[in-house]
Image (cartoon, rainbow, N blue to C red; front, side):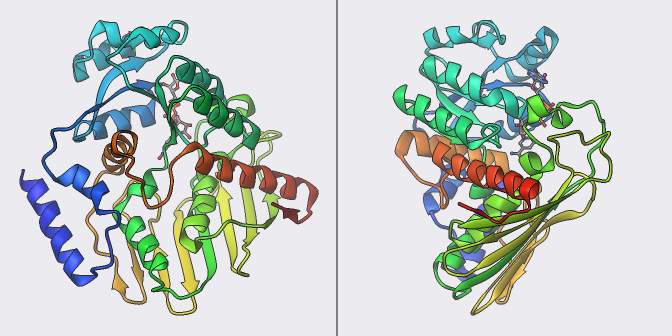
Length: 368
Ligand code: NAD
C-alpha cells in the first residue's frame, strides 16, 4: 500500500512538472488503480533465469497471474508449484503441452526458452488456441517471425513479444516527448548494447539454439531503440564485424558488430552490439531542438537519463510487472502501448537483424 501510494505521489508530481508525459495513461492505471476486471491467466514455458524474473514480477501484477508451468525438469516444476501455488493440472512438459487446449484455466503461454525454439513452440501454443507471448528475439530470422505471425492470425490468438521497454515509464515519457515534437526533427541515434558473456557452453553461444550471438540477445535493444527513439523505420544498413575469440564465438555467433542505419528523413543511427565489453547500455538521440541520453537505457532498471529539459524523473516500476499488466490490458481491452508489442513489431526487428548479418558478411550496404 505504502509503495503504491508513493508511486501515485511520484506520478502526480511528475505529471505536474511535465504534463505531456504518461501516455497512454491507461497502462499505468492498470498497475495503480483498484481493479476487478478479468485476469490474464498465464503459464510460463521455460523456467530459467528470465522466466524466474518474470514469475517474481508477476506476483505484483493486478491483471495477470501466473497459473501454470511448462518445463522439462520435474524438480523445477515441483519447486514452482509450491512457491507459486500452481495446481498439478496446470503443469506440463515439452511433450504433452499441446493438451493445454483442454485447459480453460490458462489463457496465454509466455515462451521464455532459447530463441531457436520459439517458433515451433509458438505454433504449438497457437494451435492449442492460447495467446502467445514470446520472448525476444521472436525467432532466429524474419521468415520464422512471419510464420509465427501468420499461424497466430489463422488460429485467432494474439502474438505478443516481450518488449518490456515499451512499458517502462522513462522510455514511454521520452517517446511521448518525441511524438510531441520536444526534440524537433530527430537526426541521430547512438545505441550501445553489450556485456561480457561467460560460460562458453551455454545455449547463447550455440547457433542452433540462439540463431546468432550478441545481436540476437542484446544488439536487438539498439535496433528496437533506434526505431522508437527516432520514430521511423530504417531503409538501409551497413555493418562491420569484429571477432577476437573465434573459439568461443564460432561461425554464425557474432561477438561484436558495429552497424549503421539510415532512415527516410535522413536521420542516421550508429550502434554497437557486443558480447565482449561491459558497461554498454546507453542510448543517445539528438534532434533539431534538443537531445536525450539514457544510461542505463534497457537494463532491468532503474533506467536513468536526461534531456535538454532536465533529468527524467519518472518512477521505477519493475518492468515485467508493467509489461504483463499492460499485455493483459491489450488482450482484454485492446489498450495499445505507445509502441506496439505485437508479432509484426517483432518481424520488423528480425528483418533488420537479417540485413545486418548480410551487410556484415558482404561488406555491402543492404537496402531494406
Ligand atoms: P536460460 O538459459 O536461463 O533459460 C532457458 C530455459 O529454457 C531453461 O529453463 C531451460 O531448461 C529451458 N530449455 C528448454 N529447452 C531447452 C533446450 N533445448 N536447451 C536449453 N534450454 C532449454 O535463458 P534465459 O536467460 O531465461 O533466456 C530465455 C529467453 O528469454 C531468450 O529468448 C532470451 O533472449 C530471453 N530473455 C529476455 C530478456 C528480457 O529482458 N526481455 C532477458 C533475458 C532473456
